Length: 351
Length: 238
Ligand SMILES: [Zn+2]
Image 1 (tube, rainbow over the protein chains, first blue to last red):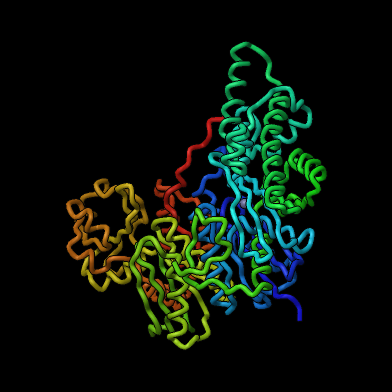
Image 2 (cartoon, chains in turn brown, blue; image 1 turned 45 degrees about the horizontal axis):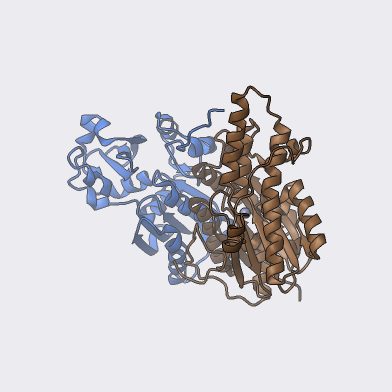
């Protein structure tokens, strides 16, 4: 008997994603992004994102089915992001999933977006080991977590106490007159710059912080420091080297992210690190993580950039794993939770 | 032909199953904050109670109304249509209220849904229940005095009883899926079809009267929210 066929729906931020997965095989990954509509606002506007999801959802589902060569009636289950994310945006995905569940008479798994970012790597590098540390970095989240053999057992190790890493990239890009979203532009500029030219602060790495919050992040300090540095140089009448600022800022962020992720692996005795989220596309993060993991004897797994950013395939991958592990589907009245904790991988409750 | 109708454009979530003029199932739940939790459960319950008939069309109230709730109904309706592989029709939720109100009024009248921020979504109807003007989003005090003197329907009119003639307003408190369905069944019987030119408007209409002008004489709409307002967002200065 072949593995069940799962359709995953993601609408927690500005991407309308629909993925189709059988077992750990990716069959389709259709994404409609409203990022261009947000660019003129300099950040994701929830109302704009929600309006775009309503228009994009059905066409994206049809596109995914066509790409996978399956029809909706072939599906065995639906998985959908129930949180965390923008509450109005989440509801469009969950409403769609519930209606499909009724009409197709198949179960629905209402799942945690963050766990999806880790499990998606099964589509790229095969089944996850019995335990893995996940480092999730995007415009919406920055967290360190631990995924067990039972995918429903996810433990939060730490998270940002202020800005998300991707948010910091966007803000610095804006200071440097680079377009939104800022990540790819900072990455590109940084290639020409010297990461050691300016010493920007590494958040929560003072010895006391390392003891008290070893796995938490803070990016508001480095953001303020960059803004202050630029202003000082302008007042002094100095030319600002965008590549040097970009490289130095990026190095400060990536240094902390990788250092804390490695520490988490060592402290927990887990020798697999999975990196996900939009910032996982950053070339310096990938290079430094590879270097430090190799030195520490840790197996590094990073899916290709397309699977790192928000997509429906990651939700389908998680639904598929839950189903293979015999998890009970969610009741039709499940709620969405914009602040769904990492530890709730699957919604069991009625709203 | 059995039609599923839903409406979530007001604090009420409502579901109806109709077989032509026959009402097979009907349920209303009033709670402004949990449309998304109750709608799918109500639809499944209604469909089961009617004996799981084959559904041949879906109709949904497309507002205007509070956006978050509205999108729950519209997204759901689109997906019911997709899953059952049947057409989905949008109905202006005020028009469905008017269908209910036309029995209760012997003269031209107006229907309203709360738009928050001290504004209302409203439209004016002739004695037979056909839309004469609207929908608009306005502060009640800005509406012409002769229109304000008409009988108003909709719970929100009671909130503005000093400005609107709201004596009988509670008789049709909210849009109801039953009337969404009846409206759609009636229009389909008349041979009405969806005007495709309204796609852009449904998504991006503003409050300058463009929505009202474009919707003039339109009855069956695309299943997309009728926002009437633009999104509140400030473009960055750069
Ligand atoms: Zn994400």
